Amino acid sequence: MVYDVPIEVIAQEVSRATGIARSRLYSLTRNREGAYARSIVAFLAKVVSGHMIVDVAQHFQRSPMRVSQSIIQLENELRKDDCLTP
Image 1 (cartoon, rainbow, N blue to C red):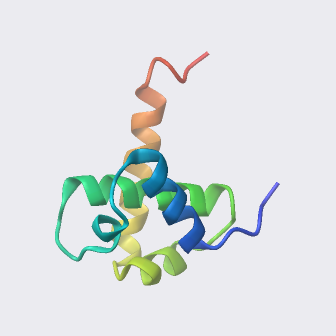
Image 2 (image 1 turned 45 degrees about the horizontal axis):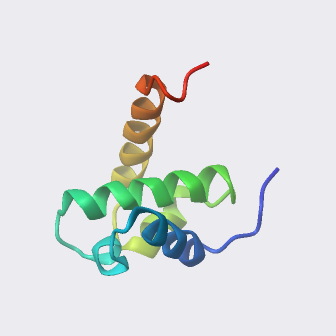
């Protein structure tokens, strides 16, 4: 099921849940903390709300390739996490 949730709302909730400031999410610097939070937003935006990668990239002023790579990296981390595997 896909939910109609704007990227901005997902970003706000990821910021709140992780404690990573929203300014870090939108920072154009290569801050690891911000990049990690953006990857979570991008993953959720794609999976939960069906947003296109290009839309997420435009929202964060990043390249679609970079956003796609960050989603893949996050998915790989999730697969390796023993707490998430049955």
